Structures are given as structure tokens and as C-alpha cells.
Length: 155
Image (cartoon, rainbow, N blue to C red; front, side, top):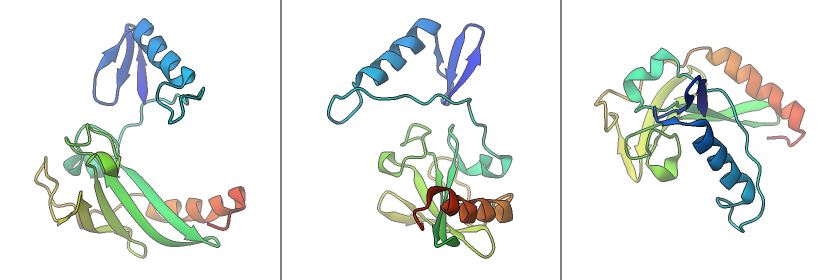
């Protein structure tokens, strides 16, 4: 994710790229340099997303994301992925982000895992990762339930 500035683009970690550097990165993506088979690829560009302040104490640089799994239009489980220094500010679990379960009924974080360990505090900020009330939880559940209708997948 990037934020457009007059002198270039800013990544989620604050790194500034010139227009030329940004164009080169996009060219690499399109040419397939990052794809598994070296096939031509596609790039999706979006404006830089800023995290809700409720996650500021348990996020390192990047933006947390929330996953809600539905079955036949009914939300059955959810989690939030929290960026860490180890994950370079990205919310990817395989890179070292934290995965915290969310209680479906309350919209509040519960048990969290970092790599292979159950944790209670964010490794970089030291703040508790459970007990965080997710804002707009009811709206998120409704969106998740309705998205099943759009995909037709049943999940």
C-alpha cells in the first residue's frame, strides 16, 4: 500500500520511493518476478490504509487486518493479524505477525499466537493483545455475512 506525495510514493513502513522507483517495482510485478512460475502477473494499487487508533498500542508500523469466516452466511470465526517488527510491519503470519482470535459474540480479541507461541503481549510494544474491542464489529459481521451472497461460494 502506498500514499501518493508530490515527490513520490510512501510505503506503509514510511519508505519514500521516487516515481521512477515505483514504476520499476510495478514493472517487476507485472513481468512476473515475484510470481511462483515467473508468469506475467497483475498489480493492484490502493491508497495507504491507516489503522484504527484502537490498534495503535498493538501494531508495529503497518495495518492490522481482520478476517471473518462465514458458513452459509453465518459468521463462525474471526481473527485479527497484527504487524510486528519481525514481520516488517506487515500483517502476514508467515513473516512473524501475530494472529489474535476474536470472540464472535463480543467482538473482542482473545488468545493470540506469535509464530508457535501463545502470547499475551505484543513483542514490540509490550501491550496486551487480548481484550481489545474491535470498532464497528456489528457492521463487519453484517458485511461478512452478505459477502457470501456476492461470491456464491457458501463460505
